[in-house]
Image (tube, rainbow, N blue to C red; front, side):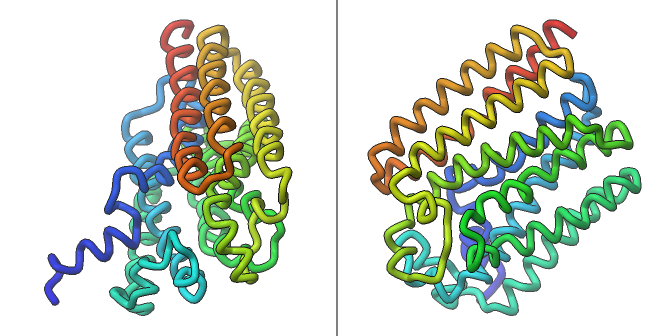
Length: 292
């Protein structure tokens, strides 16, 4: 089979076969952009924006490959994932491994022009991305580990701009961790019944049990509280707070969806988190633009 005929299989593997599935890239991108705008006081160099945006896409894509490799024996038993290429055999394990390695290498090449601190920070970022899928075997809330993996663009962004990582950057990373637990619990609710039947996967949706909706909202509250502290610490004002208010309204929409506990609604809630991240970014960017 020629390369052109195989492209749809690789597109499926890295979730570019549908625009909606690229929400994962956006959820990885938004925290990185928050950090980049704060670190550069609203004026990040275009080349850094392009490097980190491209890196978010490549790292998310590579993470999807690792995830599907790790879960290839489980995904066939899950309704949502039973047609993934590694399950159906459309892509071999060896092919997927080489493809994933190539994506990681491209992401690493992107940061080579940056300072040495960024390169050093890329090492734990890589470890977190590769190891996360395997934590679902033993961690009761692997979503917290994913929060670290999805937030490591934050210290890398500060390092790229300032050649240091201030304490507030780590607080922003913690805030993002709570956001990730929120939206990925909604995501886990989609597959919860299948995961319980399988009995070999652990997720926050299973661990939180019948309190999962309230756990999601508590994590949202912690996220909004911490990121507001960060924004105010960096001198942000009413425009930023207006963006946060819009983000809170978006989170309320998520609550209305997940309280039904229905699979389609929980999936829509997960996807809708893109607007939470976008609202926070818009508030930050416009605050720097309007207030300086």
